[in-house]
Image (cartoon, rainbow, N blue to C red; front, side, top):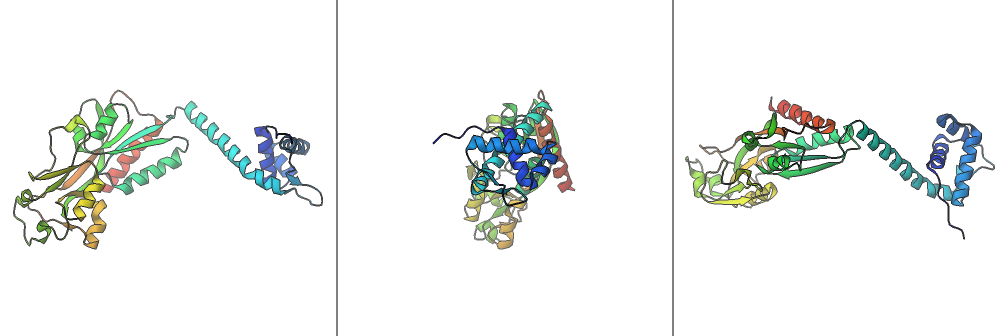
Length: 302
């Protein structure tokens, strides 16, 4: 038994046009080719594969054989791959980035991030995206090191040289604890009440904020690099801490966390900035992301 040959892309496109248009004549009109050329292309494809792809006798329209049905899915994959390759090449010729790397602060609301990235996927379908989620100075560190072209950073980025910054909205941080925590059970909290209990605090994986604390009241701290772990420990009643309101609204409704009415409330707006290196102008796709984060963030602040 001889091995099948290698069909050309042109033969596959002719085959798909016949299937999708329903006739050789309609395929010819779509591809601007004579019917004889379409018929010749299909015959050559069948010869290359050693298979009959259409039943032509006894029917006005070509009908796929079982073999033709089996080949159809593979032909579509090849055609889609070619279309993707051409779209990627076109984007690169037009100056689009080969890849976009984005670093966001862990406090950024997930819905806001998802809304921006949904739009990005639709606007730039050929541009791959690499996403980093970090806390505190680690976002700025990734941008400064060139490992991220764009960062959505918290307030710590304001004092770091070498970065261009644009305000990009905020999220409200609120102090919370589990309902059985002493701070949650107290009828009225006194100033400094948080100092007597473990405070769960996010820690920085970069050296940019080494030795600095943000909104830390208690000398008894557990430091975590993961906001999800902090959330879980708070629900278990291990300490108290500040959390972004959108992340724990469900807990407040369900009663699994309680918002603490602390006289010296350590919460408040956590402000974001869109940052990039001052010596590296963002490309078209990165610029689109920057503008979208700014517009959406400032819009939600109003």
